[in-house]
Length: 106
Length: 106
Length: 106
Length: 106
Image 1: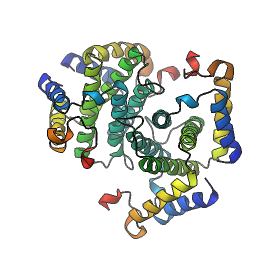
Image 2: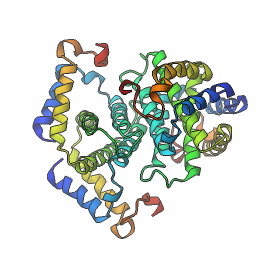
Image 3: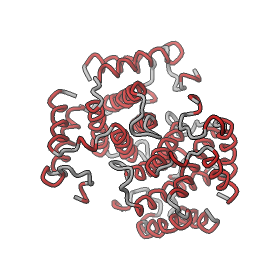
Image 4: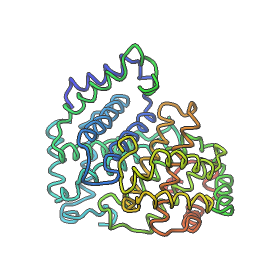
């Protein structure tokens, strides 16, 4: 997400005085709620979905993720790279290649 | 997310030949699953949470969101800004200020 | 669920003094969290799943639903039948037969 | 849930020829989706919620749980009691009393 988009999201919250509702817990609920509106696009079919709805619901997830990053003063690249360090260790290429099993069953 | 982080996520998937599992539907399920591991950090308390777990689970959500953006060849800033256009229209400042009601109840 | 099973769930909570954690909001989070552990059984495949895991996760969802029914002093049959009244009206057989569309798109 | 309610849910599905959409995976998605509509009742407040909405959304979760039990020919009391056996072993009263920690951190 570029800085302009991030700033727009922040201004949106600020203008509406919504920071008071953005506890980490409420934002976690919101991410799950929006993730399930996204999931609803695929409720009855894996292949026959409306891409415009997918775009909107995915955007909603991303906006709430940005709100939570802001609330906890986290750097997106930092936390994602720290997690990728772990993922690369948990899923070594030679074991995980072409395999969708969870790391504890590899 | 900067380009280097995005490239790292893509290489992770590619090296493991996991693109075959990344149908939009499976990724939507994955976003919801990780969103709920994030929610689990707040299951019994809104205020007493482990920030390291929050970082990891939020990172997982963001990685799967990136996978879905890639899979559908979507531009994050484009879809987020398109959704912010709608949000700004649905939640006019004068009506929504300091109010957590859903737009259809404002 | 028969009365004996319901009583066992109630005793389990009571013996551990867990009613204090069972706010409706925490139970709603818990239902979603367990629903996503159930969803995880189908994360990468719709057909290749472990039925024992499905049983356990579905049981967890049902236990937390029972906790929420108890907490709000709701009668399961009453709320389900009230909702079925609505569902039957929203999805008339002649329109909905063989069709997975949502009622507002029928 | 009494037999009459169960029969009503089954007839509802049968009359609409919806069993074709009720794969275990689709039902797991549906349970999560409805669980998150339930969660939405508590999105911005833990205490200020609309109990009628809670009733409806909880009923939706219960109906899809019933659909999944039926689909996999599971007995609700059997799977719940099998899980309660495990829960009672994982959370011994003397350790878990008054404590909301997960079993692996007790």
